[in-house]
Each structure stands twice: as structure tokens, then as C-alpha cells.
Length: 117
View 1: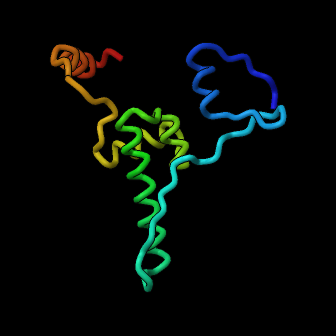
View 2 (view 1 turned 135 degrees about the vertical axis):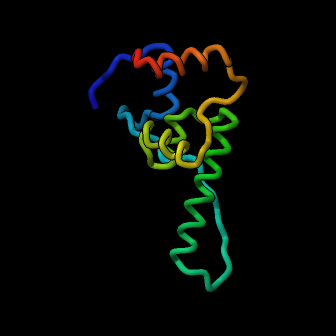
View 3 (view 1 turned 90 degrees about the horizontal axis):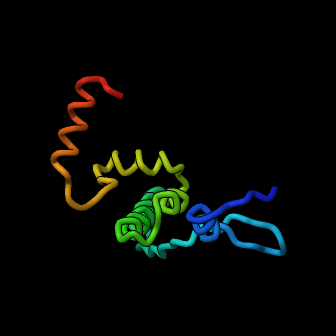
């Protein structure tokens, strides 16, 4: 893999995502794992769906606690950055939390209504 110079936040981000192994940089495997035990007789399809939902719940909880970045959470779920944002939107989960600035919100509405993009 070619050498790419990184600095600051970008370097810190890549340092968390990549490990050095014998001089090569390789992507880290998924780190969030949920061990799900289901009763005998549960179909493979139901078990697989439950496993996927458990994995999603664990990653979502870590992301909401700001333990994972959006990119890290997306990678854990096998999604792109944009795919993770779309997944959140489909579940009506806001990307931002905290207080809302009503003036900024109104300014954004006016800008959108006027087509000033």
C-alpha cells in the first residue's frame, strides 16, 4: 500500500482504523461483536435477523455515547459513511443531539424556501 502523509485529526482517525502488521497497513477487523444465543428450533433466517439487529443495536449505542465516530460505526455495520447516515434517517434517529438553535433553524428554512443554496 502506498504511503500517504496524514496529519492531525486525519492521522488520529487512521491510527484507530489501521494497524501496522509487519510493515504493512491493514484494515482492522470488526471490533463490536455480540454473542447471541437463541433457543433450539429457531430458523436460520430468524437467528440471522436477530444477530444483525443485535449488532446494529450495539453499534448504535456506542455511537450515541460518542464511543464510535460515524465512520467507525458505518464500518462496523459494513456501510459507507453516507449509508450509515441514510440508515439513521430511515430509523428516524437524529445525527445531532443537544439543544436546537431556533434562530439558525429559521434562517435555514428561509434560505431553503428562497432557493439560496
